[in-house]
Every structure is written in structure tokens, then in C-alpha cells.
Length: 97
Image (cartoon, rainbow, N blue to C red; front, side):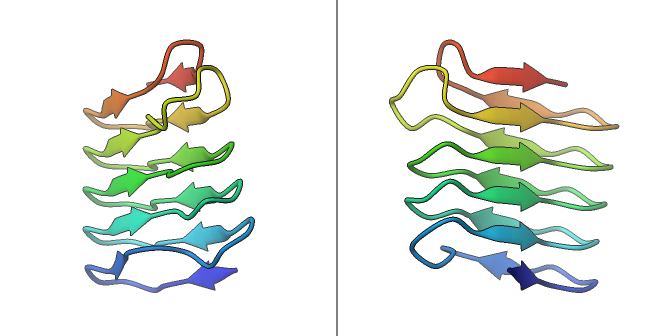
């Protein structure tokens, strides 16, 4: 598990395997790894990228950008939360704004 606190954080890649990442409040950039990752953006304008594997992204409050595109149809989930969000997903991925 990776947790950050307030501030503008950058996590370029979780560890290999299945990661849980809590970015906390702020303007964060988080990129998952090859495993099945769960990434929470928290409040703020976040950019979340799932990477390979079956990922779950949750933007939280704020205007977020979520990317679940990994070339595999239907294995990821993206939840934007309150705010004006932009979500890039493969066909069949579960998306909720």
C-alpha cells in the first residue's frame, strides 16, 4: 500500500504486483504497474493511469483525468466522482462519471 498526504504528488509506478495507492488531496499524477492496481486520487485535479492489468481508478472530488486504456477490452473500472472528469477507456471497461 502506498499513501501520500496533502500536496501535489507524483507516483510514476507502483511496485510490481497488485498495488493499492491513496494519493490524498492535491494535484496528483499516479501511474499504476503491471498488476491489478486500485488507485484513489482524493480531492483535487488528479491524473490517474492504470497500466497493464485489471485496474480500478477512482478520481474523487475535482476535475480528474483517468486512463484505463491498456489494449485489453473490459478488464478495468474507472469512477470519476464529483467534478468535470475526462476518462479514456477500452471498449467494455466499466466507466462511471
